[in-house]
Length: 67
Image (cartoon, rainbow, N blue to C red; front, top):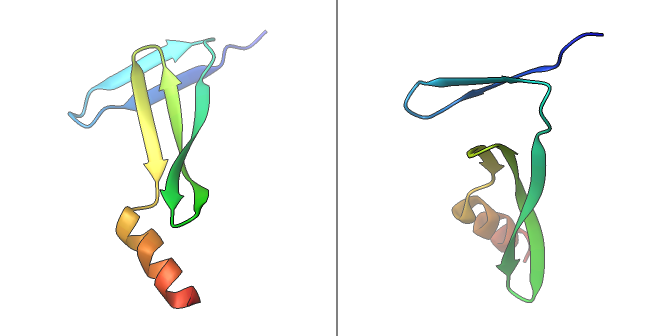
């Protein structure tokens, strides 16, 4: 069997490497006016994590454009 390798690059430039461990994925949401919107994903590997999300300013611009 083959191993699954996971690499995370921290903001300080340090690489984290782990093999055959599960990555935990969580949705991130924000309250926007009278609704809640999923705005990103958090990927965790032990104590290390990486968040991908849209900025609050971009969300507000999208709402403004829809009006």
